[in-house]
Image (cartoon, rainbow, N blue to C red; front, side, top):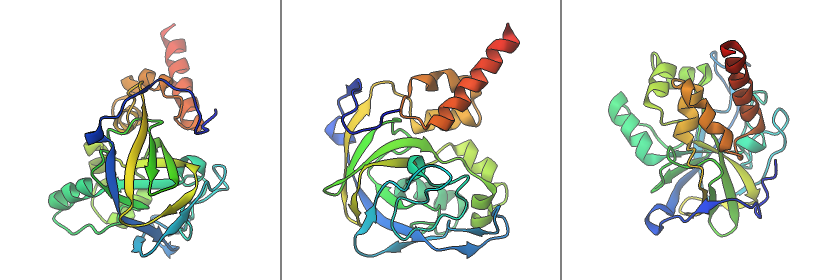
Length: 242
């Protein structure tokens, strides 16, 4: 699957009021022990850093870690790689969670590399492209699916079910053009595919609303392993129905 910047796609115009936002903080994590993590260690504890941080494609799934320099990913089998090079979560959504949970949620607490404002991440379309700062270009690839590491880190009872029910997962990105990122950078949505399959659609299809799975087949920028899962599931359904 070709994800080069010159990719031909039927994009729809992005209205100016929907095309701009900002990076509030850039967050990186160091390895730390966590009993709930599959490997006993995790990099989910991400903290804001000052100054520019280099971002580049980290390599294939299973070998490549984070695309953000200095950020540690421990479980390479399930996290990181080119399709999950950068994870972003909106400050607006963190604030809603903070009100619901009755606790402070500082930038990076959800394990996000970029805490953003002014952008609807749940409504971001798979394959949507962002320019961050002057040179970094990112492409929306897939939602975050909650795991027991996330639940153990947050320490909230029933967190996986709670997070899944709300369906505000944040977005993973692949890196199309490397470059630096820092707090205060502007974010411009360069293009948005016309298929309309959003981060929220994919998340619900993979969790609570499997009947949405057929809609995902048009989202060409969905990671290949996710698309294979979609087709396998649909093929099994067709075989059992026939």
